[in-house]
Image (tube, rainbow, N blue to C red; front, side, top):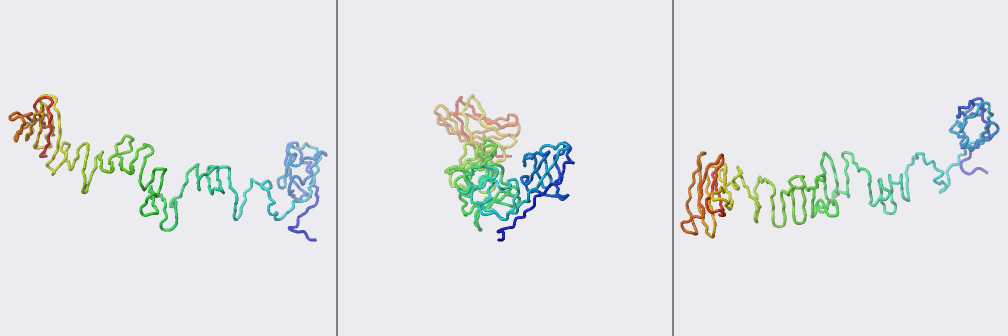
Length: 391
């Protein structure tokens, strides 16, 4: 009857060439020959090796590697050698299904195959690569992935020209970086909820936050009630523009090159400067005319309540209101100067105590300044508006 499967290659029992003459008490490795021909035993267990009439234990007293025999201890000179090779390695052909166990595999070897299908979990070096078959998770650098792709160590790096793409077709969303440019494109035209950064922060939707993490200060921050444009990265910075349901607050210098329109009020706790050309006018009607206002409660009998830079103005017209002790008065005051002396006149006086002014006014050049002073009882309240003729 013919042999089923691949026919085994069965060899004879062969005696090894004597190598005793090579023993010098130092060498441990010797060539295996039969009749001078190279021989390759398949396993140390196929060999009977005797030194001085004492049988040597395979894989303990000796090992083989291809056509070489290596002893654990060097044989002494003059000791007898005897060796047999019992048959050759058998070609067993294809193993039966399910008959190869992990212990039968050379786990240090590299395997090349056309494809690999795994029905169970995949675990490489515990945490290098883990595939969770039940939850369909892949973990890189973690033994317990909690998402479809869970990376716990290192960065995800894309070569130049590559990008992360979500979805299919023309409406797909993608994140693409090149030339220091980051493009976030949402699937819907309204862009709502395109990218969610956390439990409360969404790039485009009800809130928007651009942060500088080193300073913990938002450059742009919005909520359902306000928009803040920060002046700089400083943690102590006051928002430059704050917009809430009813108010626009400008806390920094802001330039408008076009038309500024509003259907409500424009309010500021300081002043509104429009087209100013110097530091004294709040509003410039033209290049040469400025309007401003101010208040003062006097602390001396005569006190300066308004100061102009003489080189910037030719003169000014004041409407001055004064109040003290239940009496009030309003006066028109005009001042001018020639660079050395200042000149003043009052007219259109109206007094609650006829003929008695609550305060009188004088002008003087003090260094480079043109000063307007009020003389009256200490504690007099002064309020004025001023129109200047600028240089």
